[in-house]
Image 1 (tube, helix red, strand yellow):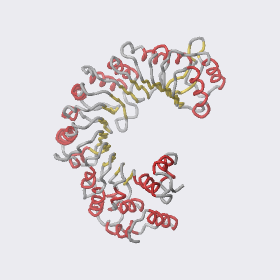
Image 2: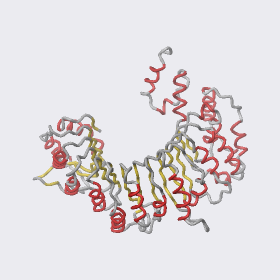
Image 3: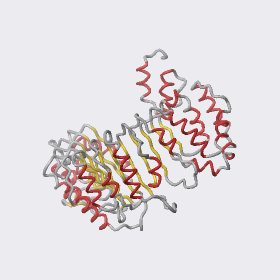
Image 4: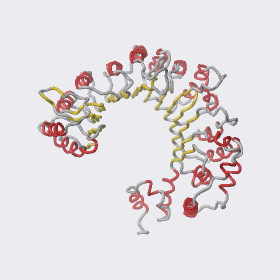
Length: 494
């Protein structure tokens, strides 16, 4: 067995769960390498505890550091140092015998030469936030292969030492995705006029406001002079951009200041449900018109993380969206994704009608869609054939399947978020919204559906996501068999 070729061991490893694989260091050299990649591929730094200290020590070894691909950082541990009386509390953390033995075994298996008390020596150096920043900078500078980088930097008003030196150390040529949740007041520190990430392809940006700050630079100046130039400097590589605000905030200066991004194919916007949403809607109009030649995919969300009340006015966001999109034409748009229960259906329908002429892929989820709603949606496809559709939630009935097969004969992929499964009765849907589920109705659905065969439907992939009890536990396999019988063209079912 130990003389099997390297490729065979790699193939075997594909069938082993990652949780198990990371502890198979001692099997052979191939599994050692695979297990090390599995163990250190994704690292997280959020709490200054024993696990974080152990990881900092391990990552000082270049053989380990090169394995990190995904990095998560929340620099709140700087405040943790201040709250622990100059590190004394951290230095007296006790580990169980079992944990000590496990760590010792891992160190031996990984063939490292660290001295016994190296971890505690590192703890003793963490007496100020500056000490932490220095160690983190040394470690982060030695992570050459990070491709996905996730930062959450909000608050920390009591920390005298900025985390920028080690946060920015990972901005290098191999970075492809940056997910950044940041308070607007911290943006100008992270993005200097000369900062750049040469090959970044995806930027996921969530903006917040540090309300505790008594005095801060004007938000508009930060958006125009720091954030917009930082995004614009990515114009040679950026393909995906996601922007959301944690609370209603005027981002129109940012939208107007971002220059044309020639490679931007996908744009996601999360819009606060409360007024003023994202500010002057003409700012979004300008951004979309500037990107009209490159955008292939547009995702729209409505959010409510913070706002004036618990029940936003649906007419407000509807009016805002209509004004923002009124003068927008995206001739090359192919994918439209509207996924939020906070979007009124009439707003979703307006967006759909606005872009139905060109799109071939539609996602419309977040609210319950009655049969007449689905029929209204499908009537929009009198132009280009729809290839992919995701809808939900819906009530699954034979009548609904008949409608989909008849209206979209060339559909390639279909995903339905199903709230309940009922038969058709006299051509009308059974009343929905009941709390009790009658098993006889489900049996009637299967009996009725077996007589519906769609030999000319070109559907290849189908997914039915059963969102309510008892469907998701009892009927998944039965539905797969049923639709394999009804739609002969299906090749994959989830």
